[in-house]
Every structure is written in C-alpha cells, then in structure tokens.
Image 1 (tube, rainbow, N blue to C red):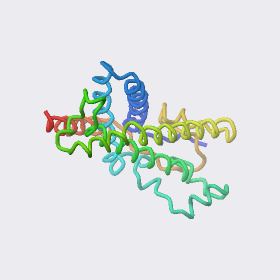
Image 2 (tube, rainbow, N blue to C red; image 1 turned 60 degrees about the horizontal axis):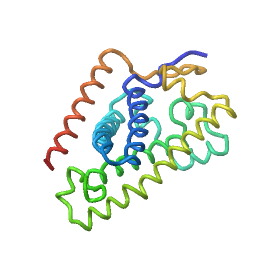
Image 3 (cartoon, one colour; image 1 turned 120 degrees about the horizontal axis):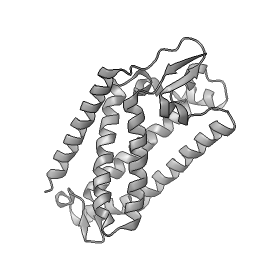
Image 4 (tube, rainbow, N blue to C red; image 1 turned 90 degrees about the horizontal axis):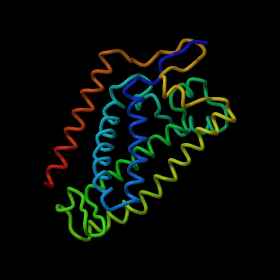
Length: 220
C-alpha cells in the first residue's frame, strides 16, 4: 500500500471553490434584493471555475483528465454489480463520473441561463439585452425553477453517495480531495502536481476569469 497523488492542487482548489460558490449562489438567490449583486459576482466566479475545469479536464493531472473517467455502459454496469476492476475506483469511479459530468453540465446551463435571466423585472443578466423578452422569460423560468431543482437534487445525491462510501464501504472520498493523496495497493501512476503545473493552473484560471469578464462586458 502506498500513498499516491490522485488529485492535484488545482483540481482540489477548484472543487472546494465550486462548492463554496454553489452555496453562496443558492443563498443569495433565495435572499434576493441587495444580495443579487453578490449573486452575480458569484455567478461570474463559477463561470470562470467551470471554464477552467473544462480545459483542465484536457490537460491537467492524470486523474483529473476527463479521459481517466470516461466509462462505457458495460463498465458502469460492472461497477453497479460489484465486478469492476480495482483501477476503476482510483479516481472517479464509474457512477461518480456520471455524477461529475451531470453536475458540470447542469452548472454550465445554470450559469449560461443566468447571463440572460432577470429578477422581478428589476435586475437583469448582463446579456439579457441580446435576447427577446420571451426568451428572457423562458431562460429565467429554467434558471429559477427547473435548473435549480435539478442541481439541488444532484448535489444531495452526491453528498449521499459520499456518506454511503464512508459508512458502508469504509472509503473516505473527502480526505483525498483535501490532501491530494490516496492510499492504494500496487503501482499506480500519480497525477502531475508540481510547481510548474500549479503555476499553469493559476495562469489558466486567470485567463478564464478574463474571458468571463470580457463576455460580461459585452452587455455593458
């Protein structure tokens, strides 16, 4: 048994920053009023994080790349039946991977619709001027109702799965996402996580934030 670096620092920081942003967005969205200023700022933050994760999913550490947790239906079924090979539980397992992709897609949809939505006819998304009133009403309905409920349900399911792994399978999924390392048997290739990759992650995040700021300014 050896400790292996599974989650690189940029991935870990992304994960916790995304969780904090989600909680903040949920609370400010429910509060409304003056809190909507924070709601939009947190939305831009989440957009930057999601854009970062898409690119990092192509070039980041080994176990953070999408290619490491793209599973065929046969592999997902084998995992459900308890017949999956051990390597399918190193990073994101087949079921967890589906949850990750679903949450990322729904968050992208939520952020995108937020850019075009409005709040009680008083606060408007920065890109709402580029859409018709009917379209704004449509995306606002999705943003405030459908998307929010789907996301909340998936997040609760995600937390339930973490609890299930901890109490039933005796597998702590939270600790590796905090420290980066996971105790594994055999010889497992670690994720790249050095000064150069961390600097690359910081530069990429800054570039993504700049891209989001440019999009927001289109409606200024």
